[in-house]
Figure 1 (spheres, rainbow, N blue to C red):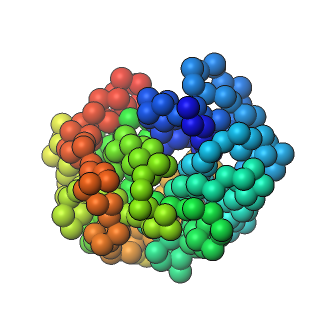
Figure 2: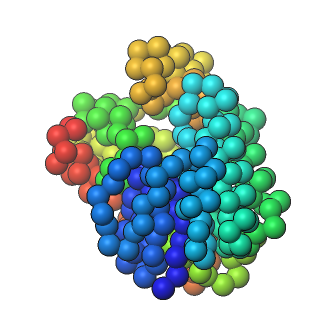
Length: 302
């Protein structure tokens, strides 16, 4: 049985990926800050990306590293730098010291335009560390990730349930269900001909979704016909400042996020998509959104 060192194991994407890894026959050494219940096939390692001793322990005896952990929301550039750049440097160093060569890294589409946001800049810098390393690396840049358990897109569902949607300026986005992403990550760990590749993957919707089209799909998932309102970029940024002022660290529409949401094209590059022989999405977005809405209701969130 092969062993993988997994960061981000307790996060949204990481939790689903952890279960997928176990089902695929991997033993998982999983990084965690807090005590966790025992789980078959998992060795929990207490620590963090800033605790190099814990990363040494995490990588001990592993055949590969799957680096999922990252910071998507921070008050300043230093927060993104610490979580996304320094953290990646630390896990790369631990992997090399342990003699691990296989390294799969979860990045973001935001890395394509580092000039737009502190988040995107940190992801681009982290990617550069991976791509210039001596390891057998693969990078995956997911678009918007949704699914049961997600908190980042939850506000869109909550507001859609009231019959409306406040959207960025007109543009297009790609999305992917968390289970499809997890399945791809597990596949990439042991696939052939993926070394030193940067992949972009989504739900298979040609050309992605218009902002309005995706909002209406969420409306259908919650049983409402939504009215869409496109906010100009300056108003979106103002809303980001307001959300930060009101909800503080819990804000979802931050000034930094508003900057990159205003970009008109967050669809994947089809030339960078995995080949159909390697992986294809299985969850149609309308069904995935409906299942996600049902999960939110079951948790009492809506």
